[in-house]
Image 1 (cartoon, rainbow, N blue to C red):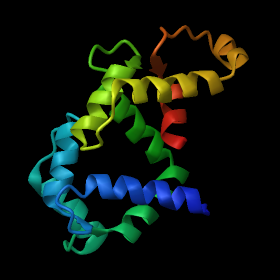
Image 2 (tube, rainbow, N blue to C red):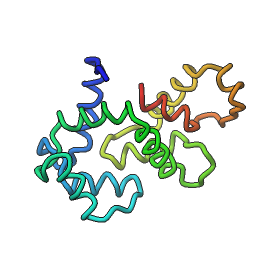
Image 3 (cartoon, rainbow, N blue to C red):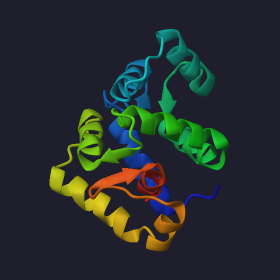
Amino acid sequence: MVLTKADNEDFNDVFRHLDFNGDGRLCREDLQKLYKVLDRKVEPAQVQALLDEMSGGAGISQNTFTSFIAMSLESNEFDTEMVEIFRAIDKDADGIVSSDDLKAVCNNLGVPTSQQEMDQIVNDILKSDDEKERAKAGETVPEGCLNFRQFLKLLRV
């Protein structure tokens, strides 16, 4: 996958937000905090195995992270991971996430987001969503909420 300048900037922003201790590398503590925010139970040994595989245990650099994300976007694993993340955010398992849910995740990840900002982001996704596409898929989503397909659009913006 060829990344645009905008893609690289977006991935760099994500990396900076995930680098909770600000040392320029994603270490075990950073990854454990991320898993906790996503409400995923992962054993410390699994986190260490991921670090060992990706960085020889030294922590994941920004370049390694960007390469990993780019490769993941091309694979089916990305969709599987996104389903799991969506399910973690969709606490009541109704197939939609609200702007409130997304705001909470952003704030838990250390990305301060106001309700107004998140409402605007969700509304922009909904405006860009093709009405014919929604009708064809038989989707009815309450105002201010996203289904999984729309959630993927949010992540790719």
